[in-house]
Every structure is written in C-alpha cells, then in structure tokens.
Image: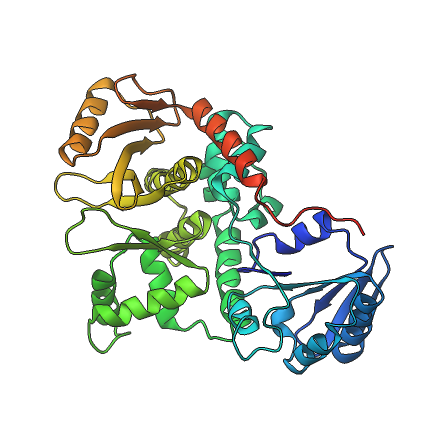
Length: 409
C-alpha cells in the first residue's frame, strides 16, 4: 500500500493508530532514518542500514511502515522490487507529496504493480462535522469542522466558542504556521516557493478565482511579462497537482468553466488574514473575516451535500443576477441548488433566492442556515441540526469504503 498526500493531513496519525505495525521507519532529510519498534524502542540508523534491516523484517513476515518515503533515494526502490517474491509480511509506504505517487506508478518504475494507492486529502466535511458534533453544539461543530479539516490546527487552538474570534486572537501564530506549511509542501515536491507561486496563493485567498483576472494582477505586480490567462492557468494547475488548489466546475457562467480556489478552507482564511493584516501589523477586523468565512462555508457545505447525494458539486457566478452558492449536477444536468448562510434567512430573502434559482431552470431548491432552520418555502430547509445529521449519515457511508483499517497478522 502507498499512502500519500499533502503534508499535515493526518497520514502518520492514521498509520500509527489504525495499522497494527511492527516497525515504523521515518526517513530523514540528511541520509538517516528513525526506526521505531512496536514495544516503543526507537533508534537512529543510516538510511541504508535502517531501510534494509526493516525490509528484511518484511521477508520474515512483519508489517513495516516507511514514512516520508519521497525522501528515499531511488536505488532503494530496486531493493524493494528484488524482495517482492521473498516477502511474506506487509510493506506500507507513506509519502508527503503527490509526486511520489506519480513516480511510483510510472511505467518505468521498478515498483509499478507492487502497491495500491491510498490518497489522504484534507479531512472530509462529514468526518470533521461528525467528530466535533459529539463535543460541540451543531452550529459550532459545523464552523469548527471547516477549520479542523486541517487537523494540525487542533494542536494549536482549542475548538470552542466563536471560530472567527479564535482565529483573530491567534492569527500571527497560525499565519506563520500556514506559510511554513506551504513552504514544506514545495520542499517535499523538490520545488521552490517563489514570489510568483506565493502571489498566486495569496490572490486566491483574496477572492481572485479566474485565470484571466489573476494573470492581470500578476502582470501589474511585475511577476508576469504579459497578462496571459494561459500562463496563470498553468501555474494554477501546477498547484492543483501539489494538492494546494482545487478546480470547481462552473455551471452557466459566462466566460469561464472553472472556479479555482484553495483546497484548504483554513489555509485560505489564514493567508487572507496574513495578506490583509499581517504586513500592516494590525489586528484583524471581525466583519470582513466573517464574510470570508461565509464564502468558505458555501464550498464546505457544497462538498458535504455532493458527497451525501453522490452528485457533482458546481458553482455559478452570475452578475448582476447573483451567485448560486451550491449546485449539484448529474452528468451536467442541475438537480438541486442551495443558498448557504451563516446567519438566518428571512422569508422574504428566501423567496427572492428561490426565484433566482428557478429562473436558471434548477428543478429543486434548498436553503441552509447555521443560525436556525430556514422557512419551509424551499424543497429542502436545513438548519445546523439537519446538517449534522447529514454529516453523520455521510460519515457512516464513507467509512464503509475506507481501505485503511486496523489489521492483524
């Protein structure tokens, strides 16, 4: 098995907690490795000795994990391939980059056909909401879940109270952690976080989603020679491959097919705060942060509902008519549209929203509020309690498909 994904998504936690391993090897950057044994003993060896000794235990029937595998030199790959016919145990590789999967499954790789890929992304909305709902009220559980998809934040701040105020209080520490995380992602992919890449990520956090507009801003900043959308598209697609950016299909949006945004809601919020307030050395204003959180919530809830209904998530940017927060498609055909708000949705606002959706020919409509259940004027009215219930149902459905479960020999 090859477990891979962006840094700080909980891969090591999953393997150490849910896999019944005998030896756990962590590959360092300086030609050494840390070897942890089942009883708790730990030793440091040269990479060659530690790696080979651990692999020989696979031949003897043990379960061995090699973490940070992307740092291992490729001559060790041949050693793994040679042992394939002798091994009676199990070898699990774990890599903190997406490129390691491409390299392992390349047609010229000696490891091709030996490992099954398991990608670990940021935590699913269903998992995050369901986990936190056992300790927090429904509204707080949903809002904190949006942040806790990046589990590293839970080691820095306690999920309780208003998440916006918690972010504002700790924004300097959290922003520095985010910038460091992004730098680590590029380092593990053997790339350099240049001013150009950094600017793209910050523009995304500031709400620039189209390659055309982004190219213009990069040109104005002197980072591109010409404001060509194709160049910006190439940069964005590279960061999609790094797991930092996602592409959401646009439905009935003139002049664009894809909405680019940060894959991590937390990274988007923290880069936004760093850009707006970090350089100026001022305290964040809560009102703009709440508006930014509301936008992140739209995509978060959209991902949850798409997973629950097993439909495709889409978005509509329609000026001056108004955006449609969530559209669920089945083979490009709209099934249902949703309006999503942190605050309450009044009856008058609800009717206007539903009329806008119907003008687009969306057959079913839904309203989502994290303050209280919206008026029963749409096909679906979902308050915070209903969202938690949907998350719980989705969690149990997804859990049946998780390949990484506790194993015994």
